[in-house]
Image 1: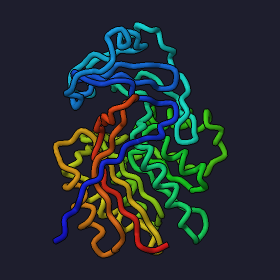
Image 2 (image 1 turned 180 degrees about the vertical axis):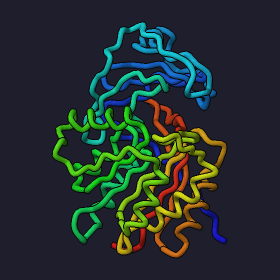
Image 3 (image 1 turned 45 degrees about the horizontal axis):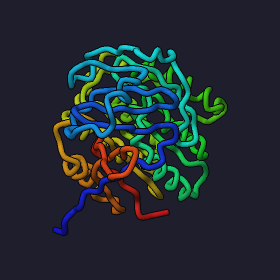
Length: 299
């Protein structure tokens, strides 16, 4: 069997976002005009910028490696929310309880890849299914590119935030279905309805709960979800993007799972890590997540 090289893709065009510095288990970032200092265990090296710059952060998150613990302090008195431009849309940022701002700029290469794939669809408007879609930046970028989007997330708050982003992006007339549901249940129903999509985006958490308390565990439930997604791919042209954060697995693991799920479809696979480049010279990259993606050989 020929080797399967893993690819490192760095997000070079991140709009209003910048990774200013990183090191000693932290990262200093700018989202729009607000700077934040957050934990980052993978930044095992030393920071390059001085302490005075770090001390100017508007928000500082203190906590351990558990994303659900910790709290923000506000030395720079940041606004409650603020806009940021990315991928041609506007995202409303805020300091969430889960240490993030609602925008994941490392996904920018996937958005570019997706919009390129949408151009290959010949049979009417492209159809995009975005599972675990959260604050909807990818949904808005797809809709702006002319796709009909089905946005699925289990959290009412997340969907409400996504609709804020829709309004801020002046895309209120865009063809987006906002669905509050368990991703597994929704995908299974779509299979029974004989629905199909040209692009399927899957960005699951390690653990989660559906709106009715349904349990999600990535190692237990991802294989069956992918099997349903395989049945939802348009027979003429299709793409799948799977991203995984903070799991004890290799990109080879999720890539092998996707390959076996789509083994009868042919096409091209790519797997590896997403990374954010640090500002300045030196080429230092901060890894963020694992990914695997596939595009059919038609279209």
